[in-house]
Length: 237
Image 1 (cartoon, rainbow, N blue to C red):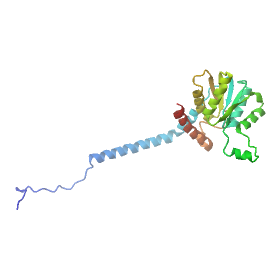
Image 2 (spheres, one colour; image 1 turned 135 degrees about the horizontal axis):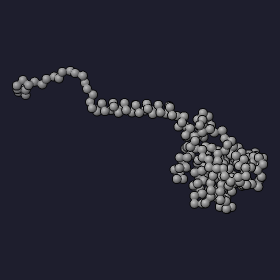
Image 3 (cartoon, rainbow, N blue to C red; image 1 turned 180 degrees about the vertical axis):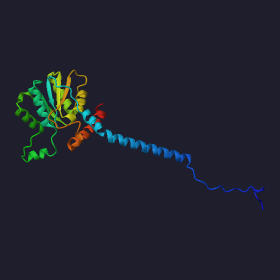
Image 4 (cartoon, one colour; image 1 turned 120 degrees about the vertical axis):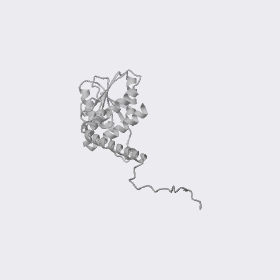
């Protein structure tokens, strides 16, 4: 019989020994260790620095430029009590002789409610009554034309009033968390116009930029405001 191993060169069986990992396996294991180590470092940083980071998130939203004497105080809708109180204070401080506010969109079912004879006051009516009760004369109040459904709508409504009356400066009043987005919207709406824009957060708000995450109401405000800021940045950039 033909034997391919003519000279007794029979193949030898290798001696058993410890199996070494292949270079590929060693590489994957090294990457896994590096990723786990990085995640651990991130976890430590977030755990240690989370409060300073959250504080900066709160501070970033609050913009204050003023108050200075202006042709028109603009009281933005949304939180009529805290914003209306601040607008009344600014008026009585002599910073302006006029206060503007818009008319919010009517809530769903409003027409059905009124058809049943139920009197449901609109937000602008409540704000107007409150300002008059705070000794702001009715003649100083300016109601915007038409409905507004967003901060940009309000900015455009104010732009029309400013052009019609020849105003050169406006002082915006709103809630602290709303100031940055409001300032962004008004600068966009007034681009190309020589109108000085200043803005102040209401001092009657309970928002604290260094502790906002400890109260659910303000935590929701901050998170929603950042989403709206992102939307405004994409849409109105």
